Image 1 (cartoon, rainbow, N blue to C red):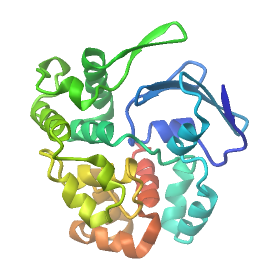
Image 2: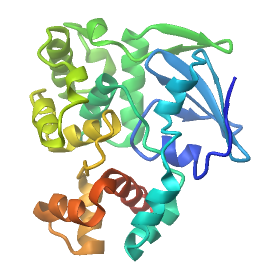
Image 3: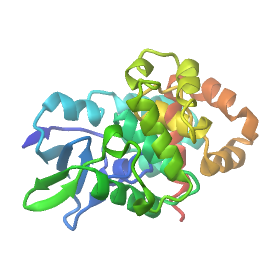
Image 4: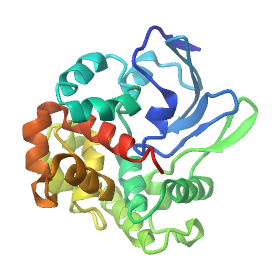
Length: 270
């Protein structure tokens, strides 16, 4: 059991249900169970403490994944100088940007295109059940996210992802064959990383931006989906083609955090 004490601000619901990840599920007691690579965990948030029961007890791993050491109060303070952002943050100030696995993030956001979150989670669940490794945790059976090798040249029709199958398979092939090496992306600047990831079929600007932000923590990334385009137009009167420049000037190094607060707040009226 791992305990990270006095982690404020933090919210399990806002962090795991804000659209940045798809493998965490809420339990009856308010805790969440989910996978990070081959590691499964049950995470609770009790009186300001994060409590983790997992098959991985590597403190540094979970500290990195949950972005424990970052000063979110400072980020919130910096962004709150803008009244629009201050209001957006009030809906989701407990969000933490998770440091996710690049491969899983690429596949997840390929699946996310023209999809809603429940269906994204269902497709990913079928992918894991059919091609991932079986893991027993607290007497229950779960399945890890499959590696590129585990789905290389496989028939993915069982996951019911439609046209996305060919993109997932293409991504697996590019990784297995060494055309894409995610380790290289960590040291790339934003623009180079964006073009590098767009080599993968089915990965355009939006998916690449999500991967750059959620897997590689390049916080100048500002993913632009339908929600963000609408929100930036309504709140800041910014045209779609001007969003990226506006965000970098307005939010500077906190673009990725601003994007998540705006995205989360925009979806609260659904």
